[in-house]
Every structure is written in structure tokens, then in C-alpha cells.
Length: 486
Image (cartoon, one colour):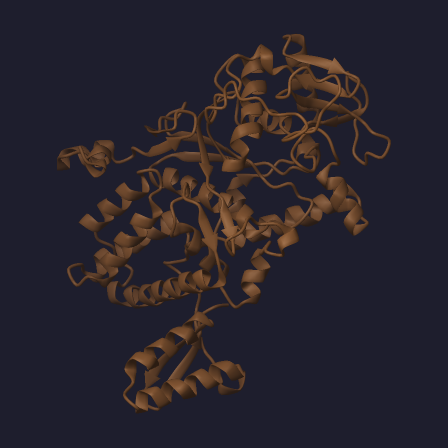
């Protein structure tokens, strides 16, 4: 049976009954599974959030566009989605291990502010960034780790009482040897971290995979609290277990994050949560692949940590970045370049132009179509965004569909993509005095190519103009330039 038939059924009378089925690739089983929530009609979803010691780069932001797309698919399929994205403002050490310095302390020292001031600053910027990317932040809970210290201490205490934790002079550690299923996510069972290579040697730690639940405070720690083990601060992993349990329950439907979280962070979450609760922690683990920038891993040392303001400064609308992400499946590695973003921006601007035209032609009325069925099937088949985009473009270019059918598909696309397709940003005519010199030169060269009937060169120059954030139309009195990126 084809994947379309599997989701929608073979016969028309099965469409209504089966239309809410969604299939997701579960990292836990490494297979595509039918999504079945624990509570009918409700989906609980936790996403690993940022450590707010600096501004998020576009590699970080890919994870949140993916999670938002997943939430949109589930919402459109009839689920009420309860979402949490945590804010890490303590406990995350440089290098992701148990030794070293807390990243919040690094940020505070860098900017000569307190950890609380750093957290406030970068949490605000993070939420502004994802809001600009079309993510409805009003429907998401953003708990901070420092707001749940009591819950983290309680969870660590439960683990100690059940024999899953042991004390050292440095703090309280989870004993992974007491949890036989450790490493089951991503088939990491039996794989030990190598001390001195992948993780630093920690004195008195029983096994390389063991991890800190609570650390004893060091003299220069800026954030510390009282606990049964002495004054200190929580380990990085326990915050997610404590906050997800407090806000979504002991057993949740979906947990998302980047693929770099699979081997350690998420396996640690599973171990401490299931050891404490005695039940399955998460039923569906979903992970997005890495984004590389200019062909390399994102790193400040390489000066390729592009942020959303950098995108806007180049004249691109933030939603062009969202469109760029949607062009690849979330589980596929993606390489960023300014040329690639320019191509995505040009495509999005064309979509917006078509949407404005269809709004008038259809008068805002929609109609069902076979294209809408195929579009929904693609999106509910593990968020097949490249295929869904292809269906959208083929339909909009086709003369076989009425304006009402195309408008109906645009409504579905907006519900799933979040690209402002129903209410696209307004373009405005640019006055000659406002046109940058390089754009004026391109206009002159294009008119010369048109006069010489070199239409291929004229089209190429038009593309260069559109890549720069402008649209050129040929009017009776000459070319008309409009600004397309805001």
C-alpha cells in the first residue's frame, strides 16, 4: 500500500475516518511509526531549549522551526498541542560535560553582568528571534531552570533513595550501571565514553557514562543553592526531566532536539526520568540534523555563527530563512550559504506575489482538491516538507485548478508552513532616490539587454535584482521597482 493510501485509505469513505493519522520517525526505534498520543486529542511536546549565555545562531534556530512545523502538523490533524521549550540559565558546562565552567558564568564574565541579567537579555532575544520566524510563542511555556531548583533537588533525592545515585566529594552522580537500558536511544547501549578523550576524568566517578545530578559549589560559582548534599548547583540534564515532569507529566508524547543531543543528553534524561518514575519517559523522540554554514560546523572561532539579525541586515525577510529550512527534510543535513538563502528568498517572494493575486481572483473562497489531499498526506508522512513544497508549486503553476482550489491549498500550506501566505507582507514601490547605486546599475544594464533583445541576459539581471530584495516589473512608462524584503 502506498504511503498516501496508508494515511488516507484506499476508498473515499475512509478519508474522514483516517485523516488525522500522522507518521513520525522515532529515534528510539529508528523507524517510522503511527503517532498515538497518550491522551486522545492531546499531544504533549517538550523541546530542548537554548542555553542563554549568548545569542542563538541559525543552526540553533533550525531545531525550533522543525519543532514548530511538527506542532503545526499535529494541530492541523486535530490535536491540542501542549508545548514546552526550556530555558537553560544554569548547569550547562562548557564542553557539555560535568567539569569546566558554567556557560552562564562565561557569559556573565564576558559582559560584566550577573547571570540573571545575561539570562534576561538573551532569553528576550531568543523569543524575539523565533517569533520573527513565524513561531507562535504565546502558546509555548518557556520555563527557566533556575525556577525549578526545588523540583530538580526532589528528583535527585528520589534517585538517591532508590539506589540510582551515589555521592562523591564533588556532588551527586547517577550510576548508569544500575540502569540496564542506558544508551537505548540511538543504539548507544554498551558504548562507554572514554575518559580523557571525549570527557575529562572526574575523580571518584564510578563509570565514564555516569553524570552529575548535583554539583558541590566551587568558590567562584555565581549561582548556588542549598541542598541535602551541600551548597551547589544542578547538573545540566536533570533540568529537562524535572521541568517536563512538572509541566507535562511523568509520561510525555514527544521530545525534540538536535541530533547532537542523542548520545548523551537525551540518554541521560531517559535514565534519570525512567529510574525515578518507573515508567516510560517519552514515547516519540524526534531529532533534526545539523546545519552547516559555508560548508563548516558553526563555530564562533570560524566567524560563521550567523544570527537572525545578520539575515535581516542582508535585506532578507526572516521568513526566508524559515523557507530555506523547509526546503530540506528535518532529518537531512543542510548547508547554509548566502546564495542559497537568496534563492529561498526569491521563491518566497514569488509565493507572496501569487498569494496576493489569488486572494483577489478567489475572493478568499476555498475549495477542496486532490492537490490538498496529496499535500496533507506528505506533511503527515514524517513532515515531508520538500515534497509538500513541490506539490504546492506544481498546483499553483497548473491551469487545471481553479483559483478557489489554489486558495484552499494556500490555506493548508500556511497552516503547516507558517510563511504568511494568507497575509503576505506588503511590497512597496521604491522611489528613485531610495534605490541603491548597485541596483540602479543593474536596472540600466537590464534595459540595455532588453533593447538589444538579449532576453536571457535581461532575465539573469532580473534574478540578481530579486536576490537583492527588489522586484522589477515592466510598466508602460518603464521599469517599476518594488521592495520585497522588509
